[in-house]
Amino acid sequence: MGEYMILMRKCLTFPDRWSMFFKQLIKEIYKLGVDSLWIVVIISIFIGTVIAIQISLNISSPLIPKFTIGYTTREIILLEFSSSIMALILAGKVGSNIASEIGTMRVTEQIDAMEIMGVNSANFLILPKMVGLMIFIPVLVIFSMFTGIAGGIAASYSSATDMTPAAFEFGLQFYFNQFYVWYSIIKSVVYAFIISSIASYFGYNVKGGALEVGKASTNAVVMSSIMILMADLILTQIMLT
Amino acid sequence: MIEVKHITKSFEGRAVLKNISAVFEDGKTNLIIGRSGSGKTVLIKDIIGLLRPDSGEILYDGRDLIQMNKSELKALRKEMGMLFQGSALFDSMTVLENVMFPLDMFSKMSSKERRTRAEFCLDRVNLSDAGDLYPSEISGGMMKRAAIARAIALNPKYLFCDEPNSGLDPKTSLVIDDLIHDITVEFKMTTVINTHDMNSVMNIGDNIIFIKEGVKEWEGNKEEVITSKNQALNDFIFASDLFRKVKEVEEEELKEHKG
Image 1: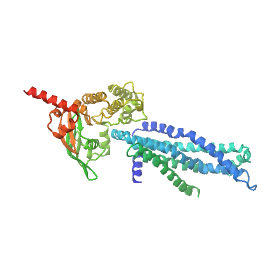
Image 2 (image 1 turned 135 degrees about the vertical axis):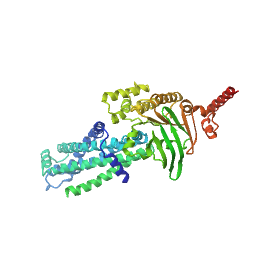
Image 3 (image 1 turned 180 degrees about the vertical axis):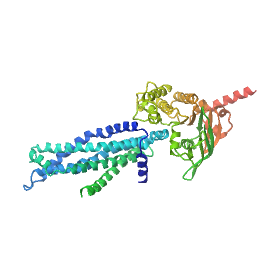
Image 4 (image 1 turned 90 degrees about the vertical axis):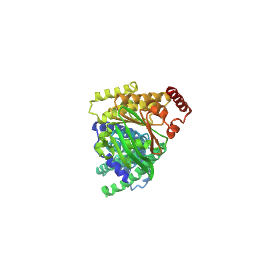
């Protein structure tokens, strides 16, 4: 914990050169964010569809209106799936990418080379990743919300269930609380910080060779996932209760 | 000029450097040699500030590295260039971007001037055609040359090289040695090289420090190495048959000359 705080203190300072920071920031947004768009879209469509189908199959009581399927699908996607579950998926993709990239730079002396030049390596390498992810993860969450709900709508057209598109769409609009979208976006910003900072910490402190880089990458994903779940619980307690 | 005075360094109670003093002069290639585990890497890491010695002084033209605050150390680092054993080029950047990196971070030049300076450095190490390639696309020797170009981009006063010839064939090693020696003289740098390579010792050893078990055992130049009577040095330098024969020939020539 102490080492993590020291790294964050070293990292969270003003960049030596703003022009280099922005250049890195654009690269990181593209590499960590834009490149993750396809997986977010694919997963969200499929999960949105499956959620709608499963709810439909589990609501057999004639007393429960059919629009409940759309309503429940929307609530699951907005409240938990698009932010928390997507963050867990991104912790695997982006977190391992960050830890292995920085870890490889450490074991091949690239970080030492920066330090010898007088560059604050933590600031140069980690800050653009953190800021880039904190900017772009909310965008991914919004994409996930739209595509997840689109998947649900697609399921409502399926003949395999007794949903109707009209009922589903009514359910989507029923008792809509705009704050849930903001709640999800705020959570995603916190998750972005958790993923980028923890993965960077494990990568930056690698000692050894390729084997240790692999271990650091795994540890980064495991630790990020645990911290995301803890943050989810805390933020939900603070913001929804 | 870099002066090292009475440096000691221990790890977990084990003394790695024992009261080492040395002077590394401007415009000369200063070699630190010794067996693996003798303490030469620890010494060079102490000199460049990656490690902190337990006691002693490290003076860069009179400025004590150990007493420096963060901003002074940062300013000093801009006067240093370092060639790492594995080149340590940034994988995500092209060769030209690697050379431009220190300029982008610290120089006040315009973008065009920075590019011109980087191209000059690449040209100086005969890599003007490789600027657009990535480190993974070039050979080990080219990577070393690119790393030298990056190290000299900011026109440093002090150049440090950690095993510059490791992993290179003898011919490429000579090219790298000559290049380091030439730029040292040309830019009047203080160059400190940590090496095992006996070809480098014979080729560019203006000033040689031999370390054995953390103690400075011998100091001299490439001519004095041949005639030295220091047993530990001779055991190290002339471990191979080739160098033993070179020594015998040199000594015979010396006797004939005296006769």
